[in-house]
Image 1 (cartoon, rainbow, N blue to C red):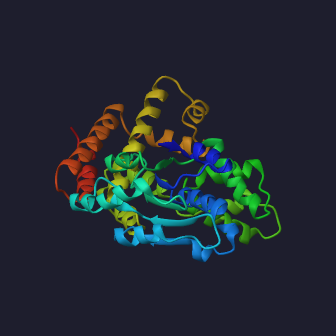
Image 2: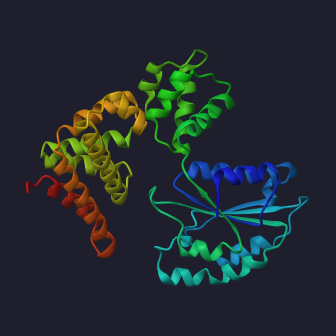
Image 3: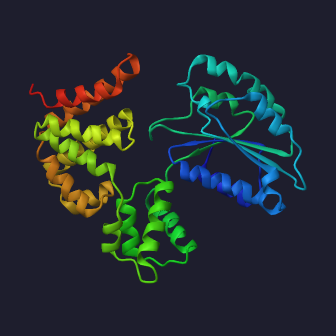
Length: 342
């Protein structure tokens, strides 16, 4: 298994494999990787429509995959087949699905030298890791784990998007944009395009970024936790329903609530030891405005309450994984329990 950085080095040196499996939580970054493979293999042939095929992995048809792999490229050294959203590679799928991929697992051991087969699936949350089905394929393919970019790596990637469109953005504005945007390249590309269209020929200002800022799920999680601190169950449930309506999955919401309580607990402990806002900004890499809000919110909980709420999050996670319970109902019960006094 290799990292995104190693994959990019290999592609620059045109070190190609015949079978790639990409996995990670940022589908936009995965798609960028696939575009890089296409660029060095089939885009220059002039017959990309004949030498590149794309099919959904939602309904696995092994015969169709094999037939596409066996098709000889036209006026090109390579033929590329992309199987997107290949969720059959995830361990959580039904066992009979695992049996269906056995013929494919046998076939890719001897894939034609002119074929480049690409499969990918997207993690359900940032904590997911490649499972046993991926590990069983590693001898026959290059598994690339695409982690989200962070810090300056993320800022540099975003700046590249502006540069590619001929748009200049100041360092302060770029830093602010990256601090409020969700770290997902598909979302980032859309927001970059919106900003460029909105500002036209003039420079991008912080006010432009604020005005065009997208919905931020972190803000909703902040509000949800605030309702919990006020013991306002209706407000918390309404916010949960709003997040679900916007497309967030309950297990991902649980992870975000747990992360929020964990950060609040750490900040509460640090503040008790005399830490100031600047100390927290540096240690947790927070935007100063966000740090101030988190400090204020942490004061609404005692250390004991935050520790108990973290335990409740872990208990809920175990319950969801070990029992056949409705995830959304489990999250709702977590919120109710977090507001109960000991």
